[in-house]
Image (tube, rainbow, N blue to C red; front, side):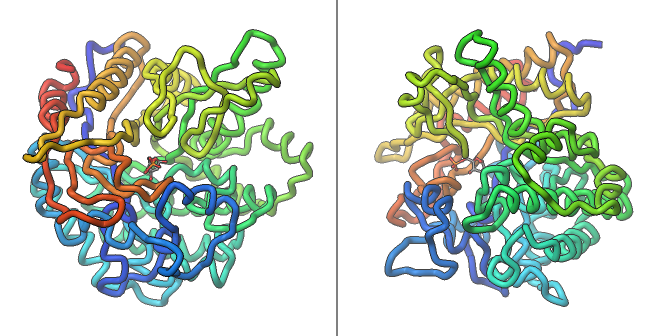
Length: 476
Ligand code: BG6
């Protein structure tokens, strides 16, 4: 039956990641992660993709904004109180693997790390905010890169399994919603954040992803043993894809990209099997990865319960050479300019209808509950002397996306369970390490040079989102 609006138990909230939020990068026994050696600034992503950066902290050459994040490690009580004031039903957070196992593969977990997340989770539950936990959000322990070469090494499966078991046993009785790997499909392009490898070949990228699929299914298996009511989800970027024109060759080129980028990881994690187009792609491109029968059986036996995805923008594919000089940069991918869309200050094309298309497409293909785990506008906010921030541009972006989500629920019958806009409190940008690329409802007084006392201020969007939640998405 098609519903009249969002479900009564719809999980409104916000999303974050430990490495972009917490700071305290070397406190209470935490080890270094890949985020801790990722330099700040606009060159971050090109640098990480080039592989030309040290696996050490080099303060002479670079800045490291993730080291202090926005100091949530020491201020989480104040921040959670603000989330509660907005009426959050859920808060998507990640656990930093290196707070629990500083090297990623230590014999014993670090009790101080576990105690920190116990306190955070209890604080959320005090306000009846349901935590949603991402087990790995761009924060593989650095030791596993240096000693094991990152996710192409199958040993990481076992290390991850132990880490997942430790946190699921500790928190699995009080936390229902979990996700395994953040934006797992960025591994296809060899993102250092995802697979923790430098200068990897295409084969290594797919090997690393395969290892993560196995690790993800093992985490699902453990979750069900610990508490059968746990809901385990996968998480990938979804970029609605358009063919620039109706030339069948353009549409075919778009479809090929669409399959490998938008479907490949979801097909395996939801359906439990490698799709035939991927096997054909491997054969055509001489990609041979090591996949044992036992691993394939684990993937088959433990698919996810729901599918979550980040949606910031769509992308457009053209095979016409004249369009190739007019490229749009996006969230880990590029495309040609879509003449029907405008862009954010960081060049990401804004496309609310694309979100409805994404929801219909994914629900039609998989038929499992959907969770929009990231969405939002990275923008420059300019506070006045009293720190009043009139972020109508953000309200406009979010309102239009929520309206399209509602159409997907009401008009198209999609089973949507949650919406957690990205960076509900300002935090360090993943792609640039900047503070100036802000997404939050809550402003943090900190700039790109590290100036500011990190006080928190409510933006105009704070009260707007509060009334969206209170009206269950009716008042936009
Ligand atoms: C997603 C990531 O890619 O987009 C987040 O899961 C990230 O970690 C978010 O912060 C927004 O991207 P950015 O580069 O603007 O911070």
